[in-house]
Image (cartoon, rainbow, N blue to C red; front, top):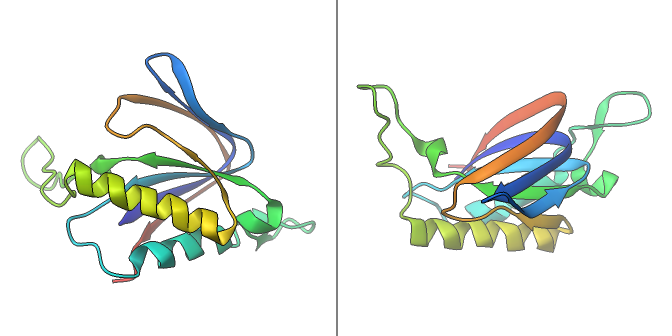
Length: 147
């Protein structure tokens, strides 16, 4: 699993002009699922996302986590995170998990984050989404599973 984590002051998702999710301060997390997911990966990633100290404290240092600030998480499935564009002009999606499997894994991540204490909003799976965000910092991290 591959996550692109962005610290945001707000983010939202629209599908067909209709709002499907919206958060205030917190994290926008783009989620790609590979065909080679390992056991325990989802729980490890959820723990990382919930507890990464990437929010500023009173001294302006990144010492606070999502849970510390009581922020929200917007999870957006994005299979293109496993696109391989090293050859040719059209990316290969061969490493991305099939949609049925990816949907289950993304939902497992959402539930694991909720277990950690995070408040979750979800983007739409297998839909054309318009994602809007205000990147705070900007702070953006790429997090791959522990394998």
